Length: 343
Image (cartoon, rainbow, N blue to C red; front, side, top):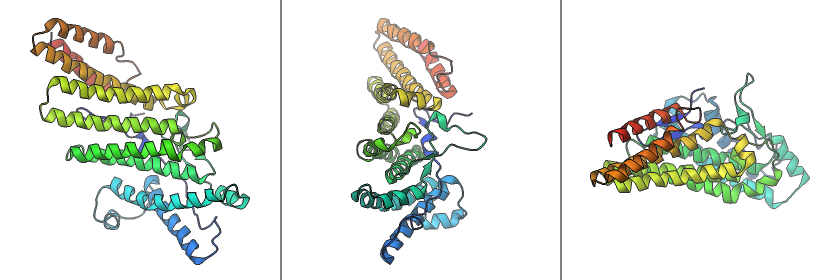
């Protein structure tokens, strides 16, 4: 299966988090409404849910022209989906607070169960496609719905940031940081109360640790954009080396966090693991390359060769192997050639 990596000069991007699917949910058909106002609110919630649900499931029959007009003229499908989620999430958040405020009411618990909330996972190894299609995880809790919708929102912010990469680096970095904030909110506020309700059969996206990892990944991506801006300004090699290593630190923290939980590590897809390790290795290689280049320019050849040897011994042992995506291997191979010419 082809790896879901986007490759730019300095940025490898993992698209899988945005590839979530879900099943239909109709709030007004399960929750009882005592008055017409409440009924309309439930219908509005279902309508908002259906709007992004059909889009991510690829089942929408709305033409591109109509979708563009409904979204205020934007032609970006990602931005259109972000707008749909921005309308849905506040309504859902209000319902979550209302339902949780009454405690474990048997009737409300039954209504929530009847919603049959189901989502796929794009990060779990156990969710791989089979002949019957993707695996859906069902958790009868509104906070699960809220968490998964927010996770998708953060993932789409990352995809939107990528769309600005070639035209507006400031906006791109801002969107990556906004995604990091969404994931941090998930990790600290939304997902912890859900954990006692989960079983071992849960998507990784519903765990606070993975939300924290995605926050770190988003910060690393924002830092990668900062590197690209600095390179465009012909910034000194020493500063570029530090900026690259800043990306490495975010990714190493994310990788360590994933490994610290045996369950999460075992459940995580190999592509997710390869993305974290591959990006970290690539940015460390570029950091070493700039350090060696600066040392050579200042005629500190001994130190430059020491950095070169360290870099080559560190990275060659990890190539080509299955641990790294092929595109990361190609970029590392180019860097190793550059280091050779520094001798």
